[in-house]
Image (cartoon, rainbow, N blue to C red):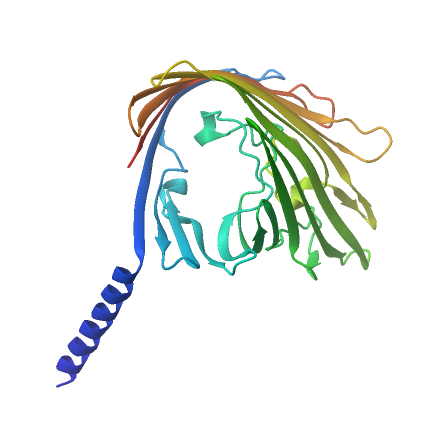
Length: 348
C-alpha cells in the first residue's frame, strides 16, 4: 500500500512538472569550446624559460536554456565546466512589470563591457588587462530601458591580517547606461563597495572602500569596427574586478593604504566575408599603492586573430599574442609570455 502511495505521488509530481513545462517555452542551447595553445614563457631573475602545449576543454563551455513563461515572466539557466566540474554560470528569473524589469538571481553584473574577443585563456577578452569585468554575481537588478542598477553580493578580503574579521553593512552597488547612436554605442558603468575590517592585534577597525568608473564605446564603419574603453578605480582587489596587476590595498597595524588603478583597451577588426573575419587588440592596466615612494605594478596584453567560420555555429579562431607582465610593485622585472594556437568551438 505504501509503495502504491509513493508511486502515485511520484506520478502526480511528474505530471505536474510536465504540465508546467509544456506551458513555458524552453529554448535549450549549448557551446563546446576546446583550446589548443602553445605558451612560450620568458622568465626573469635566472628562472629557466618554459614552453608548453595545452589542449583543454574551456571552462566557459556551457549548456543552458532560456525560458519564456509569459510576456511578463522569463528565466535563464546556464551550466559551465570550470575545473572539470559542472558549475552554475547563470540562474535567474526576470519580471517585466511595464516601466521596467526586475531580475532575481545570478548573471553578468552591470560592470561588464564586452568589447574584446581575445580567445586565449578561455576567452580572456582582455578582461584582466584593462577591460572592466566584475563577473557573474548574485544580484537584485532593475532595468529601465538601457539603464541598469543592481544590488550585488559583496566580496571581502582580510588583506593578509592574521585573525582579522570583516563586517558587511551594505551590498555592492553597480549601474550602467548604454547610449545607442547610429552605427555606434557608448557605455558608462560604475560600481561601489564598502566593508569594515577589524585587526585584533591593534584593536582597530578600518573601512575598505572600492569604486570603479568606466567608459567604453564601439563604432562600425561598413565592415570595419573599433572599440575602446578607459577605467579608473580604487581597491579593485577586494572588489574582485578582473586584473592581472597587484591591486590589493594594504593594512599594516592600524594604517590602511588604498590601491589606485587605471586600465584601457583598444580593439579593431573587420569582417571580410561570411567565412573570414579579423581582429587585433591591446590592453593595459596598472595599480599603485597611494603612498610616497610606491611603484606601480603594470601589465599589458596584445593579440591578432582570425575567426574562420565553417558553417553556422561551427568555427575556429587562430590567435597569436603576448602577455607582458612588465614589473611588479617592487620594481622587479616579470615574465613575458608569447602564445599561439587555436580555439575550436561548436554552438548547438
